[in-house]
Length: 273
Length: 292
Image (tube, rainbow over all chains, first blue to last red; front, side, top):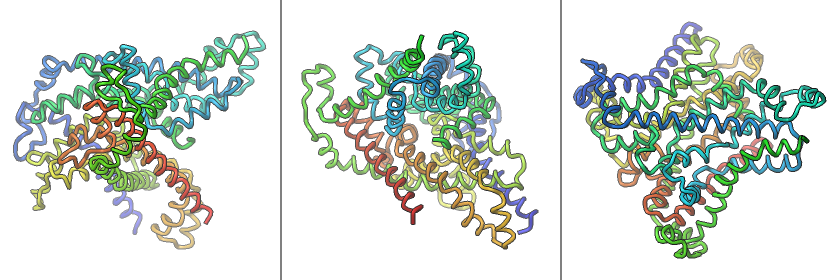
């Protein structure tokens, strides 16, 4: 095959693949601007004839989408901020601080990685019920405040910090918390960004556990609300597409803005694992 | 303050969360699975009885359990190779020295990964709508027979598999790209000088060099695909004729629709054991392959 032909072939395939990946998302955007009923016609329209924001208005004014959006933001932000702190501290301690049982505890955590989260869900529901947390934000937030994956990621990264830095500070009489806050944290900044995006996206997109733990509409996150709406409004394609746009857009924008960190984290978490 | 005490303070918050909300429930699930925990026990714990392995035994005799397992295995056995194939293909295209605009293509191909399953499942449900969907319209306009994608028990699972491949291939694509970049360029150089074809280079250099990456990616994807739940929940509600009811879907219905928490825990444990056995076997087989 001549290089020119190979080049054309490669780009043809790349364009085709990219189109398949992106087209459903663009189509969602287009249908979301169609007036009600337009999408249920033959042939299926590709672009709205009279673009309208009516579906978005309907979602936010009558379907409570504003509330679900706030719920999602609140829950995902709380999980991200607190779990970041907990995972950073633990990951750093496992990497750099000497204590009895360090190896053993870490091995138990690594071993637990093979257990799928769903195994814990039934007793977790009962536990939270006895704690009075079912159908509160806490039911989704609290169990997510630390992750083995996050601790593992931070530990990998923190192992690269030279011990001399901490030793010098200790000789100068700095306490461990001070060392962590002033020396270690700034060095961990890249992994903090990576872990924060990972956590936020995972919390935002999470489906099964919020579906179980949030039994009342007032606490629904966007995915749960969308799933419930789509069961009621099977025929209202335009409305559902607008709902999908509201659900996807925030995470897509976040990813586009910080994708370098996200992809680096993806490789760290898997290749070295 | 000594380092050891500080270390414990550093790890305690995370250990409390993981211990109380993950490890403890896992152990509790094992206990739950040998009880008849149901709606009556939920109301009054004194109704709880120890039933030994009865939950497991009854599950193994239920046709729905076997069909759910069958559907899940179908999803894994067909979905994982297709996903890996798509990921590797995309990674090789992106990795080609001839390809231009790589960052753009990489972002476009990866975009489905970060989207919310529920939201994109809603889109696919519309695209594959029997009457108004673009897919059937396109098939019809090129003279092909249309398909009742999500309404026909034979087609619902293939449609969900297509969806999963579309949604997930970008993730492994990134990992494969890193794997491809780690292959020394002079291997290909030497092969070219020896006159090896592109296909021969792929078979004798790319594939063997990618083997460790391939193994890790397969294991991760297999465990992920065994956890099929949101897709059938949104796209088909487990139907039609329960043809897309997965093991986790069964666990969800058993536990949170019928409140048979004991039997649902048994479902969860069986799934865990199967996942563990399958991934351990994959690991072992690949090690044997290396020795031979």
